[in-house]
Length: 140
Image (cartoon, rainbow, N blue to C red; front, side):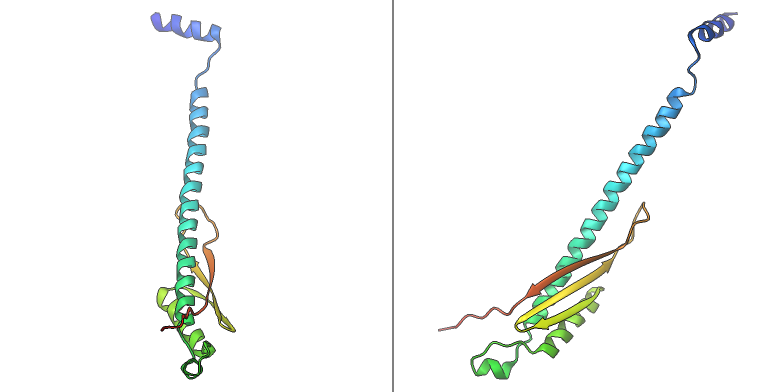
């Protein structure tokens, strides 16, 4: 008897069953999407930072490959073939791919890393580029 009165009162007011459920579904989906974007953005930034670090270190390794004959005569010059080989070796040891260019006394390295996306199907390759030059200072 009491249930019938409650049902009748709800019919007079306008039934709203199921409306909260739709709101919760929409809000939960939006929250999960925002969470996925934060996680994927963090993963992409971390991978980009790793690619930059690897490129910097590979460029330093390449810049250390001096032409010793020229150095002994007083000129600081990079051995281009040795610099390219050393930087490529560092890239492959680090698990990255990339390109190495030697232009005069500057070694430029572009490192490419792939990362696995956790939640969203996003692009999974990032690049980092760095340059290095040999630093020499006369000793007295």
